[in-house]
Length: 137
Image 1: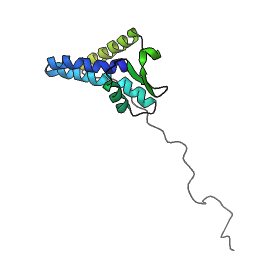
Image 2: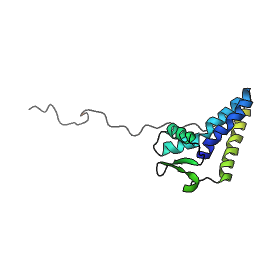
Image 3: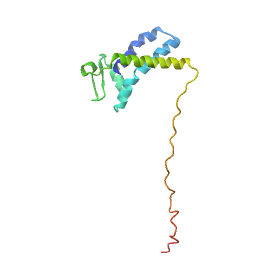
Image 4: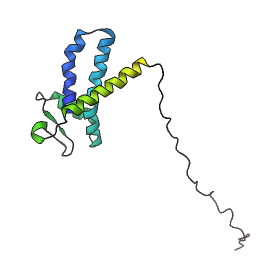
């Protein structure tokens, strides 16, 4: 997530040179590049936005967040790296799906299953306890 988050800053120059829909497209990509790092931090029980801010504030781009140990480390020295091909493939597939959605007039998705009510609790009170009469004390 650290490398992708730092790519966000590299795209600033490109975004400034574009206008209209192209600029908006680059800005959308920029916002999406920090999502993996934010999610890693949140999965570790941290505030994702704070972790992203701290990572991006560091001038050394290899510094990132080690979620397992809850520390900021040099990701290369710690051996925390993603294979380039995996990251590239994920970005290509995501952009392919996004392009498909932009050019499609309809989208089909699964309907969320609604929670079914479980076997409810019996009615309150002592109803149904026959034979107890008036219980004259």
